Length: 416
Image (cartoon, rainbow, N blue to C red):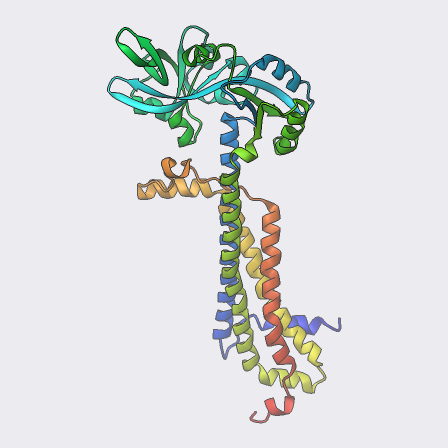
């Protein structure tokens, strides 16, 4: 009860007075500035989180959590190696693959691509490529029939569809009566897939493992084994233990965090830099409270002097203006959180609506790997932003409140 008048006066100073509405206007601007800064920071970090999460999901849907390959031309005795790996309780499944580059031609069109030979049934256990087909079937990859599944953008570049044929030309050479020619084979398109990432849709093609072995003369060898783990985030630890269990000699083992290390590290670095830069925007808005409170203190000199003469202590005066500044910061922060979270949850709809309105596309898949702008709100980021912004606002109140507490009643009332 002894402090109730301090809270009441602090709240009262937030509203405009008959004599000067400019102070109230400046207080409102300070709140809006803090709210906009907090909202922008939440939206930007949510977009970075969504971008990272979506890319990680799309990349891992086509690759694997970990991969084992040989230092030489191929991995011999891969069935024995796969059996030993599958004994680990942290490994869900393993699948062999053959991977090499080739040139694909169809009519007058040609394009380079990465040819991946897989066993369809086993590949389903380590990746979700079979679920991303938009035409044909992944099960149509049968040994000896030389079927091929193309990325949607690759099929578009070659101007082919399901049922048509493409010629796969490798870097290997074959000796024929006409001379030494590149080794090639005609494949029938049995399906197309769309992973949602232009890089994969434009540069990947799948064939059956046996057909790839014949095309690249691998015999019984494979390029390596793909692994699906129980916990993808434990991949670095699991691959180290697998390397020790296999002896490590002659094997090259790496996980998804190493294969795409620079890419995800750049996203984290960008996220950190954006947080620091946008936090400066919040800091500018927060320290705008300083000018607001300084003006309030200057205008309320007579009120402060009267309060001091009727018994208010300097600590009480300090509490009045801290209350006012804290209220500005609290309201601005809460409004900014609500606005930022609301925009983040509806960002994709807003962007698509704006694209339709303007008749343009903001996210080109050829540049940004995807055409959508996903946003994932992480409440830890929201909490960090909220406490930081509110802390800066509270810090901004200290100097003006201290100046108000030092006001001398006699000097303030000299001309009144």
